[in-house]
Image 1 (tube, rainbow, N blue to C red):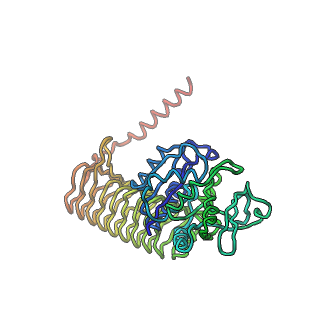
Image 2 (tube, one colour):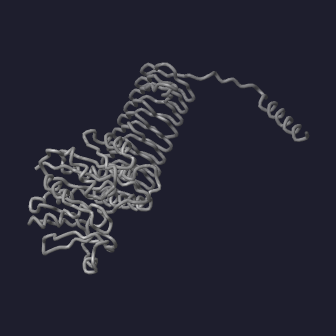
Image 3 (cartoon, helix red, strand yellow):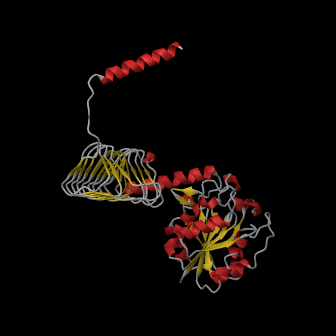
Length: 449
């Protein structure tokens, strides 16, 4: 049976104290909403509908950047979760299959948990995701009748006995699409909040003699984000999980608490990551690589045996082949570095191709931008670039070629050639002393004024 996702993302999030819609605030380099979409992707949904409210245009733009096939609908008034889900009915008109309702501000529900809910739908008309928190607080309570879910009671409407129940409602629910919208049409707002509760579908389903079940997840999966403090807690929770996963998968983290991962970071086993390394989105590090301290990587690929850092920066489009060395205070952007090449010190390599076993001397800069356009630099295999060389792109340095230290290279260098692009040195005898004596005299004169 096909599945559709409805992701509720209409909340303004006033406690965030932000002009940005709450669901667009980021954890691990991705919007909260994207985390929810990625969790639901385990089901390969046939349709996805995001229900937006505050900042709908921003939300729509962000969603379309992630997946242009997702529908975004507007909930003009926030009248409760059932009312929000009802806004998704028009784009799902005629859809035959299950619907799972997720929340854009609850980013950490595991794909495995969502898959378990889809499996439980084979046995129950309605399935709810529950959890047992250390402090049930003001969560809605799941009232069970044996193995069946009898009803959900919101905290405001719960009696003393119901508030003593430890099994709580996450808000995530699954049901067949036609049934879900039919049940929602019967929901009223006669409750303490005056809202249309999605949770009422359970009681309505049971009144029809239909079964309802519960899938239980860990409390940390249900963490919601409503404030900057919650956002910080969510980031910490994500990083703790990502670090644990990396260690379990055979990655050495010498100081795990100082390493920060993005939502899509991939690191192969037997890699070593030293302290204070930050991974932005889009990074893949193959097995056996070594990322040294205080390095920052984003949008790049690091192959087996490569060493990066310390204090290195790899920007989007950086592709390091096997056994490449990128050393301290080196920045690489949109450049392909072939096997065994070395870029060890104080260098910028942008919009470039570096050949196998080439050596890039300290202080080298590929001058790739003319103020309007970017231009490429090509450095051949086994080329030796002397320290403090300025490579003014577009330019090519051939295989086995060399540039002299301090050169400004503006033309192509043939294979095997040595290029010198600097003024001839002249020594003026005694001129340094005369110049310094004159400057000191001028300084003394000015002090006497």
